[in-house]
Image 1: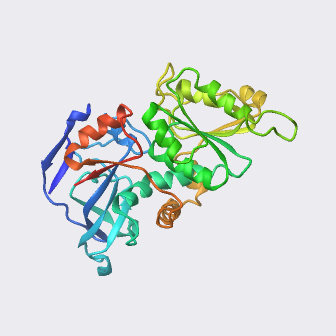
Image 2 (image 1 turned 90 degrees about the vertical axis):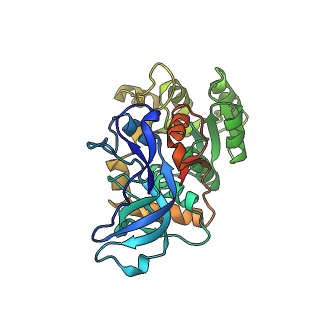
Image 3 (image 1 turned 60 degrees about the vertical axis):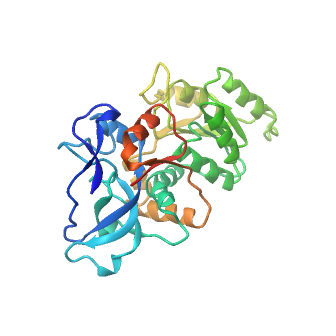
Length: 341
């Protein structure tokens, strides 16, 4: 088969497209003929040898990638034969291997796909979609909510905007550059602004000032910030929160003096402002989901199948995985990045 292999940690150019042996499914496993493979920003960190929610590989070469969709073309010993020939999607978990024409996974991780859901959409929802719904466990959105979504043109941001609008919330989406701002507006945000412009917070404040006053006669403020950027943009977004507001953190990719670091607040700062700040990834998310991340996968796939959530997609050929990584790292993508073998 053809696959993307990483022989040494480092830049995107270290991802090479080459032929390698076909994987063989073990007991209780299936082999998937891959038609779509998801790419995550985390993949770029693992490629550099950095750890995160998933540990960096300890043995090289390795085939990156943990989200795949396709058709089951092989079974391991003891695997239910009914899976053979089924269209499926799976998150591979701790074991990578997704950037390939063939991938092996435990049958217990599979989800059968309906005819109405495309492979790329399924790949987006099995990872990015489940994370989105996991984040949303930490807040309640409704007509009185005002949500700020930094990185609103990204995979998670796109889904957050849609979910919040479906809940009746007022949504403010931030994105970098006119093209991305236009996409956020088309996705349904009530206000889409370019965070690269120095006056973007003033634009948001002017918008809030035009909304109906609160029962106490005050200008409305944001009730929740879905923060995946941190840095200067994240800090400015948090400054737009009103009392009782939530700062939900699931990343810190922003460009600024604090790039690469999450925002931090002292207990005194939070108490004075009357807001909360909480990281929502990892154990906290799994605990909220009742200890079973699969429940989020099921809910995510159902939301896409029923048309309630529509992932935005950015495709690259499998052979161009290095270009996909570079584009992700330089903010040259919109929506979920998907490799097509």
